[in-house]
Amino acid sequence: MGKVTVITSGKGGTGKSTVTAGLGAALVRRGNRVLIIDCDAGMRGIDLMLGVSGELVFDIADIVSGNCPPASAIYPCKTVPELFVLPAPSDVRNEISPYIMKQLAAVLKKYYDHILIDCPAGIGIGTEAAAAPADRAVLVANTEPLTVRGCDKVRRMLADLRIQEIRLVINRFNERNFRKLAAFEDLDAVIDKAGARLLGIVPEDSAAVGRAQKGLPIEGRYKAVYALDRIAARLDGTEVPLEL
Ligand SMILES: Nc1ncnc2c1ncn2[C@@H]1O[C@H](COP(=O)(O)OP(=O)(O)O)[C@@H](O)[C@H]1O
Ligand SMILES: [Mg+2]
Image (cartoon, rainbow, N blue to C red):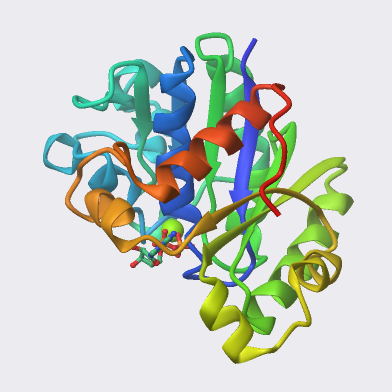
């Protein structure tokens, strides 16, 4: 039975979708079969990042309305075998309810080792639906105060949904800029403010994530890829020392 992880943040643009796509590929490198469910109705992007956007016919809304069986709306990523995507509805009006998401994940988790759920921004019903079936959550923050505050808010919402395991990924980390901005004394202060245990730090790395923008897998000899590999190992239950 697969483990369901929601990737969320509260604030938009922190790199949720990038981290989701990157972790999906990293978990596959560890021998897992992985499904990414895109829950960002109206603003879906995982299909683009995994290079399948040209093939989309069905999405989650089609499964829910009975237009197709679940398997017809799940697309294999051609460049990463064992990585699959279930696209979000292209129309925000077709947003899925928390109850339906729970039912869907309960069926799908039988077929995958991991299900990663990519969230919309904000703490509205879309995020609640994305989080509803999750066994655990990964909060993605940058080191700007606004994104850290967003984490604190979404963490409270996840706690209300009784998600007990909530971990933090600091994304787009750049030591020089972090010191220059001086909004926080150190990374410990960021972690304290976000209110979740650190799972890992992904550096600012436009070369690595630029691949996703072109529909290529986030892989290769990049520092962000090494960081994502370490985070994937921790998600798989392997102890890897933190790089703080
Ligand atoms: N580690 C990183 N290094 C450099 N750029 C990044 C990194 N992570 C994300 N980005 C960039 O940040 C922007 C927002 O990322 P995205 O994953 O779409 O965020 P979200 O899903 O939270 O809205 C994109 O342009 C993406 O390429
Ligand atoms: Mg996104």
